[in-house]
Amino acid sequence: MEVTRDVILDLLPLYLAEEASADTRALVEAHLSEDRDLARLAQQWRQRLPAQPPAPLRRDAEAQAFLEAKRLLVAKTIGLAAVAVAFIIGMTAVIGALYYLPGR
Image 1 (cartoon, rainbow, N blue to C red):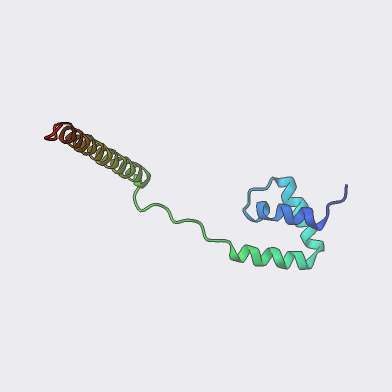
Image 2 (image 1 turned 45 degrees about the horizontal axis):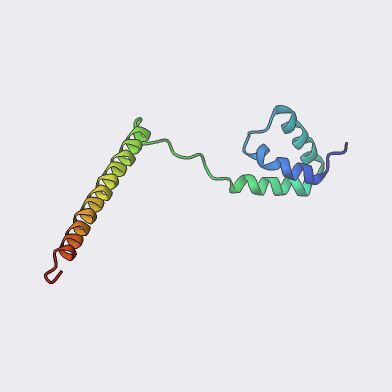
């Protein structure tokens, strides 16, 4: 089977992200050495890749983010429960007022 330019284009993102196997890297590099236009395109793509993400400022940044998310979730749950209780009390008052209306 012939390895076409389309196959290399499919493999190029893996190659540029350095996630391709050694055999795939060798295949892409061999093809890029023969296809100068595609090699130029690969170089342009490589230059546009973002830099590595910065390391967290604190070692426990992930744990702190998790705890903050958990705290917000608990606060929202308590707020929703308070709204539900207020609704039930209000509806009970309205139904009671309607039931005990004078002239009934």
